[in-house]
Image (cartoon, rainbow, N blue to C red; front, side):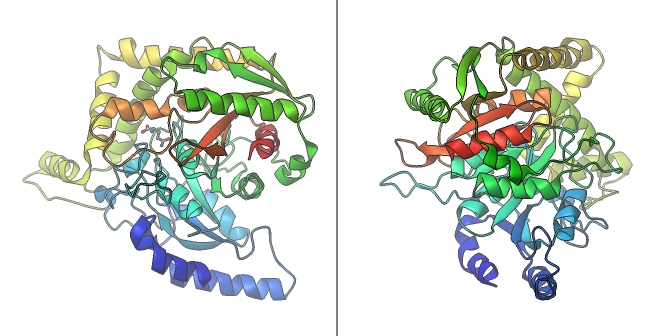
Length: 451
Ligand code: GLN
């Protein structure tokens, strides 16, 4: 009830929730109370969560924050959210995001932008909460939920976490089922939590993770007891610092933050090693070929016939064209155009195939690094939270937000962003830990040293 009241009072200014669901929350909470009274409490019994609007929720409007999904009410529940409800969690509502999770500032949402609860010192200017999971990060930072689900295709869990002073965990590709999550780029998409603390992230992942027969890319790997591993400390851990991440023009404060992170880990007993990930500079351009290519294919299903909104045209093709023209926002259209171009005959080999080869090289860089180190430390973002409109008119400036995060998705690895202090302007900054496949445990226990 307290959270529902907070949302009533506080959501207007932040716009984190696109659909609060207080009736569902209270019904689930009553059932949780009854189980607690009988001594039958489960892992997340009664804990109130926000759900990114990319997760299909049965009978509850799910739009991916696009006009094209209109009033779509799925007839099924995503596996990840079902896992949460089966563990006793409570749904407070659906959270805002960039349209189809394409963006880094939450400014592409059809429901309007989300406002970061943080401000620059001495300024009232509104800042972005990061994206695409901006509703998730802002809701957690503003205490409008205890924790939230999110998805990460190129940084959408870690970057908004960094910009709001929260913890964001992008699990290994295959760790969580993608079934019932609106697809953006299927070979990169992965669900994960945004939380207040590393321990909460461990608890959330525990429940969200696991193989699912409905997603053939989900992996049959044992899900360890993440919270238990938190107690182990990091004595003797080998931490890699990739020299290629010292990108030209890196701000002095990001450099200082990184140095500070190195010192914290050394003080906790880890050894730090410079490593080389030579193909890093190709990651961003390759991502912005692979992700739009897959998006253009995935978004072909929105034809005005099968889902949501329809603009009836003079014939079938006209109906498709009018529906997609009216239903998709600018950024989504840009991705569909780029994706269709790089997949088209004549350009496929030059762009898409080449990008896939680069992807293999990026993965190989990490495979070699794991002989020398157990975890990699980098900044999460090149800058703290920026103002509305600062980058939205310049797609390339916006894409550069992902410079430190996309390699993780390209290589399928787990990544964790932890709050690491405040910027000189006031708002928070994050450090990113990158781990070996399916070694979220090491990320979590290393993250606990930093938070
Ligand atoms: N900002 C990146 C993009 O727009 C990543 C988004 C995401 O991870 N969903 O593609």
